[in-house]
Amino acid sequence: MSVELRAVGVSLSGRRILHGISAQLSEPRVGIVGRNGSGKTTLARVVAGLIEPNDGEARIGGLDMARDRRAALAAVGIIFQNPDHQIIFPTVLEEVAFGLTQQGHPPREADAGAQAILQRFGKAHWAGAATHSLSQGQKQLLCLMSVLAMRPGVIVMDEPFSGLDIPTRMQLMRYLDGIDAQVVMVTHDPAQLRGFDRILWLEQGQLVADGPPADVLPHFEARMLEWGGMDDLAHLSG
Ligand SMILES: Nc1ncnc2c1ncn2[C@@H]1O[C@H](COP(=O)(O)OP(=O)(O)OP(=O)(O)O)[C@@H](O)[C@H]1O
Image (cartoon, rainbow, N blue to C red; front, side):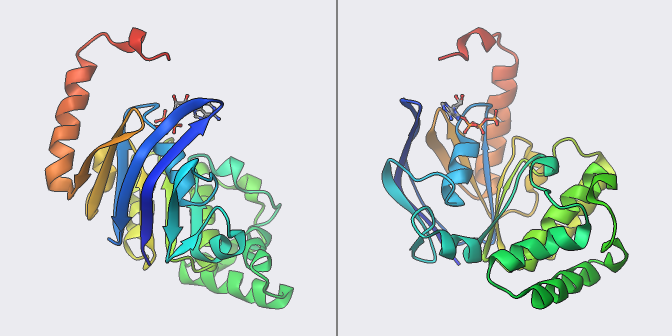
């Protein structure tokens, strides 16, 4: 699977948010870093097909995700920062089965698929559990299992570990290690990108660096520390 961004430009509410982003992403683990407001979430939503670019195009496996929603449902899974915005069903099994039903699987098949993924993660006993009773980390794992049940080629994650304590984060990162799908992950924490293959660094909606972590992250961290030492918060509006 490969994500292809060709001169992607996005305007929201009349404001230019992304400018001419081009990248062909075929590496298994791709990180997107940048300051608050640099356009990371917008780019992640473009990759997932949730935003159609005003200019250029975004494709996965040659298909335009924003125009072909059926293909998008099969090709790309999405995990957001807050699992509470994603979970809609009262029980774990219903939540996991929902995506499979949406993909067109009949109910019994969807239930079997949901059971299988719970089993794979050693969580078969969660099937009847109330989703609202889960901890934040458990909810995020539920989202991950729900997405994996749909067997996407690409998983887009937007700050998936913020708000989780260190052991929970480490555990979820270990789960990620074992996943075959390509992962495109937005974060501003370089520590979460250990083992990644490629990093895109966005500033003010433009790609300012693109390469292996060893090349990009030291510059990114140095720049963040440099900016952190300055009083520039007053300039962030606009
Ligand atoms: N629907 C919208 N309408 C207008 N402007 C928007 C909209 N959504 C985002 N923006 C603006 O686009 C810019 C980029 O936002 P985006 O959420 O993509 O950045 P980000 O890098 O993910 O930020 P953060 O790290 O704070 O989540 C910000 O200035 C934001 O205010």
